[in-house]
Image 1: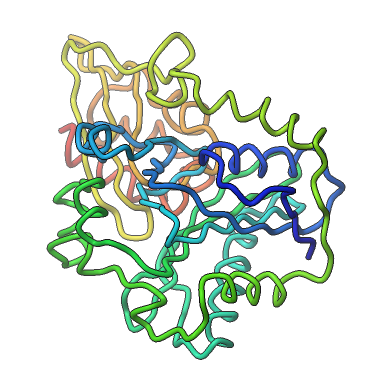
Image 2: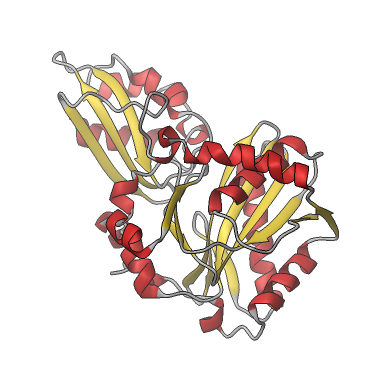
Length: 337
């Protein structure tokens, strides 16, 4: 694997590093690439999340915490200089296999450091049942990108104030707060310093290195600007996902094991037929739900028989990771009928 090294050590805003992943996937030869980075206090929302439902925006503004959005799915995470961020870029189109390989190798390196770590659930790495790393992934043509947090240390009070997950999500995990299920490498007993931990992780995973040039940095900075577009950041504007009209909109809000939290807004006309649909949540996108699922349902009457016919030839799990046809039908009929 090749380590991508930056020619500076001062942290940039988080979207710079997300842009660096895209740049590596688009412009470097097909190979495996890895880099580690840290940022000043930042909340990172998943691609499909409603920011104002997941983040205490007023608290973040008051405390100078940056709030950004990434292109991968999953839930909100908080990062600061006590939190390492890892990025892994791999050739190919097998997203789930690449993601599993990434989380497995990170957990294996933690075990090599004497920590009882394992990859578990949809996207976590845990030590003694408590999460030390949350991870996510997305896909560009011919490339898979996986990235995640690694908590060396953390301030649970700040994390709990900045991120405000829904009650349904917390209840599904049988916990009462963010901090009750989160740990860090320091609490787990790591004996390495910040610097030594990062160095050992890079040395263990990588056998080659590329030092980025000023031209590379300029190209990354150009991609970075896309992350500040209000249509992307706030899901607002002409190019943002369009929500159904407020007239006769039904909202389906579920937490599904193996999928995550999903909220589907559905406009239903006076004849009881489905119109526009839009999904938000911390699920992982594999493809476009509009093309793969929602377009097949448009115009369908809200009864079980017609809904089942409409999705009979769809493969929801190819759009939203873990969402099979039977589960989709069950949540639609439970909430719409």
